[in-house]
Length: 494
Image (cartoon, rainbow, N blue to C red; front, side, top):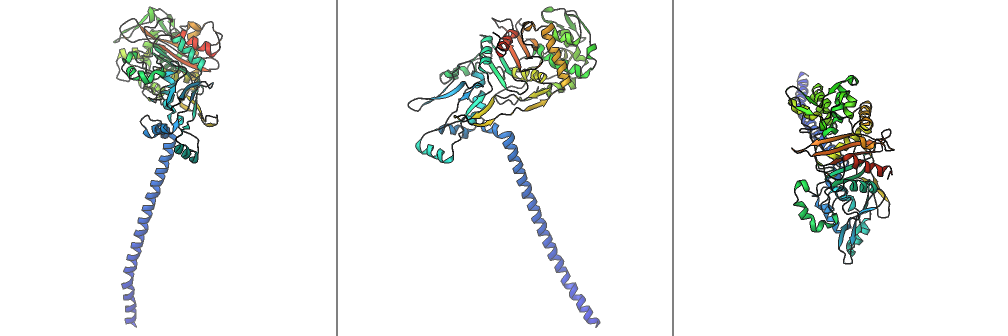
C-alpha cells in the first residue's frame, strides 16, 4: 500500500514541472502578444493623432508652400481661379488667347500689388490661396475627360476681405512717399486694406521681375512694407509702456510729472520731448495724450522689466505673426540686464525695439477689441466660378492680451490724444477717433518716420488702422492726414 502511494506521488512529481513550464511558456507568449498589440495600438493612435493635427494645423501651410511642386503641377490641368475684392470686383484673373496661352492679369495694376501678390512668385493672396485657386470641384470622370481632351478645368475663385474704395483712398493718400497703410475690422480680423510703397505693376512682372530683384533694399518695390518692413515704433509704443504701468500701479491716476522739455536719468542720457516741447505738469493720461517723452523715458525705471518684456511678448513681440502672407518678426530686447539708456529709449519706442505696421495694427486692434487679439485674415470665402460656396473663413481669436478694463483705460488715453493732445487732424470730423501718434528717429539726420495707429468710432470700433510714412515724406504733413483720407472713405465723408 505504501509503495502504491509513493508511486502515485512520484508520478505527480514527474508531471508537475512540465505543466509549470508549459504554463510559463503560454504566459510569456500571451504577454508578448499583448505587448505587441499595445505597441501597434499606440502607433495607430499616434498616427491618427498626427493626421488630425496635420490636417487642422499644418496641411494648409504645406499645401501652399511655394516649394510644393505637386501644386505647381496642377497648373498643367487647371486654369488659375480669379481673386475678387469684397464687392466682387476682379483683382486678378487669367486671360487665355486664341492659341491657349495664359496670362495672369491684374486689373487694378499697382493699387493692390503687394496684398494680392504675384502668381509667379506665390506672394500675397496668390500665395495664401494658391491651392484653392488651382483646385476644382469636377468629379473624377469629368477630370479624366478633360485630361483626355486636353482641356483644363477652371479653379476656384477666392473672395478676399479687401475693400476697393478703402484701398484706393489709402493708395492715393500715400502719394509718392515710401510707407504703408493697413486697416482691418478689430472684432473679426478681416483685413480691409493694405498698401505699400514703393509699388510695382504686377502686369509687368514677366519682363521686369529680374530687374526689381536687383533694387536696393531701401528702394525695393517687392518688399511689402506693411508686413515685412521693420521700424522703430516711436511713440506708438507708449501704448504698451502705459499698459504695463497701469497694470503694475493701480493708483496710476495719481502719477505726476513736471515736464521741462527733456528728462535725464542718473547714469543715462537726456531725452528731449519732440521739437523741444515743454508740457509742464502731466498726469499719465495727459502725458500720453501729449506724447511726453519725459514721462515715458522715466517711468520705465518703475516697471518690473521681466513683466514688461512678458507683456510685449504676450502682444506678439519676438514671435511669428502667422498671418498667412510673408511677414517679419518684431523685436523687443529689453531685460533685467539692460542699461539705463536702453530702458529710457525703450519706454518711448526708440532704441532696439522694431515693429512691422501689421503688428502695430494688431496691437491697437486688441485695445479696440477690449483685450482680445483676433487673427488677421485676407480670404473671406472660396467659391466655384458659378458662385457656389466651397468654404468660408470663420474669425478666430488669436490671444487674450489684456483685461477689458485695462484695454478700456488705454482706449481712454488714445481718445485723449485726439481730444486734447497730438491727434489734431480729427478734431472736427463727424466720426470719433482714438489713436496714438508717433515720430521715430532712424538715422542721424532730422528726418523721422511718422506713425498713426488707432480705431474708429471710439464708442463702437468698426475699423482699426496703422499708417507709417518713412522719413523724407513730402506732399502731406504726416501719417494723420493719410489716415484721415482712409477714414473719410470708410465713413463716406468727401
